[in-house]
Image (spheres, rainbow, N blue to C red):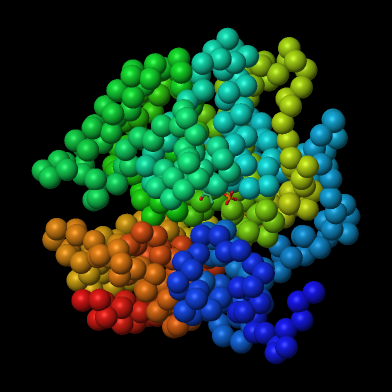
Length: 457
Ligand SMILES: *Cc1c(COP(=O)(O)O)cnc(C)c1O
């Protein structure tokens, strides 16, 4: 037993017993962990009573804020009714039945089927296993390779981390073999000198076709993409990107999976990111705001063709040997049903549509005031400001300066949570944000930028 002679602070206790994931440890060593006790609307409150406007909605997911009564009541009511069950052996909760109906109803598909997981990573893993299973059953056992893009984020399990296109996965010896990363459709960063956006998109489409021909279409299981890359730095696709690549995938019989873990349920200003960008995928991956962050849950939503093909593949062996103990958890399903209703029918999705132009204008004004902001990019309620040493040449700051970490830390001091990603600062506030809260967010960010750019200039 550890019995410290002097009482320890919350910060010390956090350090001593908790392993931090995705955390800049020098910042924590210098500043201490922010230990949070509760939330009020879009604010979180720490153990010292300090309030922070969480402009990242937790991790993109707490879209209805941190104390939504309707969601809390829905959770309580379902805990009273039936606090836990699985979806194995021909049994599942009534809540699970109703959520699947709802998800297919709000999906872009005329019909389809849903499979539940506990997270977005597991939903992507599940989709990959479905594709492997399906192609094998159809006599194409070599269709196993998975195509994704550089800067994509699809999760952290061994398979979904292999799909993620970030260099930090090298420390795990990932990606696994057979996971291929295509070019990132970020025109501002990766467009070549003199290349128009159309030419850039044509180049990415050519690259896709070349990779398919090089690898052999009959070795490729599927293509996964986020409509807007989220954790890769809020990267909306170059204009016409999905229209250019989808026909190529179709031509080679490669299923197109839309990872809507962030974009789904209103973040981009439509129910789905694929709707915003005008394409219909073969399946959708959902998580994060599926439950407005009130329960860990993910879902694979299969469109009609993949549903039918998977059913046909399962028929001969009479069972799909996959599932998680808590797949389709009744409390998660009850919360998700309520969350969908809250977002779509209580004005939250509408708030994003109505206020996105105001947010964009506010951020553009900030960019105009700071010569060290090179790009503002985003849509709906997901935006990033890219810090640069030199705007004209798009030269980044020396990475040893940790510019975006400094901006996030300076924001935290101001009482604003925003996230550093590479040299960008990401803002993806809860959908309930009022005009006054938006102004507060913009003012605090502006002050943090002024402070940090003065330090590093
Ligand atoms: C967060 C995220 C995931 C992973 O979800 P987890 O619940 O953290 O496993 C997958 N895809 C996208 C697009 C995400 O943003």
